[in-house]
Structures are given as structure tokens and as C-alpha cells.
Amino acid sequence: MKSINVRGVEFQVDERGKFAPRRPNLWAIQIGYWLGRGYSAKAVAAIVGDGTTEGTVKGQARRAQVLPARARETIVPVHLPSWQRDMIQRCADERDLTLDQIICHVLESALVFDDLYDAVTDGRYDRKAQKSQRAA
Image (cartoon, rainbow, N blue to C red; front, side, top):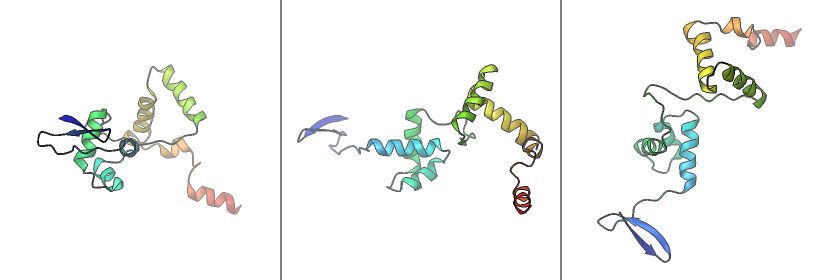
């Protein structure tokens, strides 16, 4: 790749003199945002909707080193108030774990390996229980 100057702006050109495509920083931010929210490269390409391909999204993520460690892993965003995040972080620190690790361990233990949802939540989030409480 060579650089040429056109009216004071630097552009990259390939061996044939064709301009290399340039993407704005907002494009990269958008790609990172959707990948960080757990969307697949194919879904991100569709959301961006500017002709970006799945391969381009994967390439961008690979260069930024934000792909999951294993091909079959995915990212699941968890939205928490900051005070709850701080409490979980303290528990993780006590066990010498990262925040991601402790959340994964709890979810795997409570929902994947054993279905302990009802025991853990004690009906607190059940829609039936909420409706009956409102009616009373």
C-alpha cells in the first residue's frame, strides 16, 4: 500500500492505484458496540446495513482482539445497577475471580447444571405471583 496526498488529505492506494476503502471511527464503534452486546457478526453486518459483510465484521473483531476465546462461546450482556455490580465484584474479588467468571459460575450452577431458578428467586419474579399480589 502506498499513500498519496489529494488536496491535503492522505489516502491509501493499492498497487493498481485503487483507493483503499476507509471507514469512519463511528463505524468501528458501532461494530464494537453490537459485538459487545452479544450479537453475531452476521447480525451486526445486517444492523450496520451499509454493505458491510459478515467477514468484514469478523476481520474487524479479530484485529481488535474482541472475538470470544472459543468459537462456540457467546457474550451475554447483563444489565445491573452499579451498586449490584459492585456487590458482585466484591464477591469475585474475595474468590480471586473476575466479574465475568463469577457471573458465569453462578449461572452455570444455578441454571445450566441444575434448574435452581425457583429455589434461588423464591417466586420473587414470577408473573403469576405478582398478579395475585396486585389483586389482593
